[in-house]
Image 1: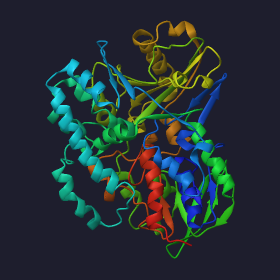
Image 2: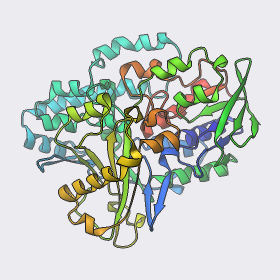
Image 3: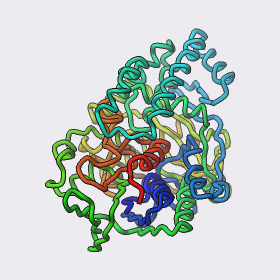
Length: 485
């Protein structure tokens, strides 16, 4: 039984079916995808969540595992540049894969940082070889597993934050921001996230950044189609209320609708911080008690605005990072002070730059994301949401999309309340536990439950963490921890 039809749950279902299990997926929402579901409004198709596909081989593996050609199910298009970073003063930096183009831009900002970047890239490659190639699809069930890699982590400087390590090699503050923002893609503060997440830089440069024709939702539909062919049942509108345990072993799941479904294995593609206290009785939890769960630090929240215009902006890049006037201070407001700042940094996704079919002819659809505090902040999003979105749209009009207010034809948004209530994420966080060193690998929620036999986890909350590659890798871990039937 797989709880949740996000990328982790769908990938888990494929791998479990290939292992020989009969598989049923229970999804609480009316449609599959989880964070990667799709919103359709006024002729526009909006990806609700993930928009960046890296390490595409992890998707291809799922189809090849059962003898299918992934090209028959979905189409990926490389995005160039990966991201266009725009600074408050108007300068831009295109993060690209080609070394010559990248170094030329670094030289234009600070010639002395060219050599520094080369050394930084080599360091990131070494981190990638350990943190990704060796550890991403391997479980950490015992503390001794963690102890074995600690010397290597110390040697690689993983006790430092991403920003701290980047600053060892680069002098220019703008370049430090360019090469340290990527932990935000997995819910981490660059000033506190362990530098092991610098591996994202190498991962993107090695395999590129891609977008799916038809949007990320097209990949979800491809996986749903594959699962139908594999005789996997997907039930939507079927939220799970309880995991039934007998003698510390999974026996069944119960839905909010009253169904009891016997099963031998439960794989939860759901936030473990919700699963443990809400779906399991306290008597069945020795390790993940209510108190232990409460101690976990949740990642940041997200405010995501969706809007469409009756014109196009052909000068835009597919992905634009719009940095605000503050970097360290804004991140402190989000992660530590938990206050809603007057300023913001934004990620603007313009998918119709790559696939015009996602909007009506001659129009353009957008997704703008602002990192915000999670719901520990106490922000009243019912009252703040519309005004905050209007401020974001005004900033976009001023800095990037001239005439936006006159050309706007549709708009709506989601806040951390959506993540907390619709997606059932603790504190309304967007990425599960914050990716701190003390919440990574062994210290993250385990892929195999320590409390209940037959219970496993995939998704952002468990090892190796958030982001599409991390979530897909968590499903790959199942092949190492779930006994074959």
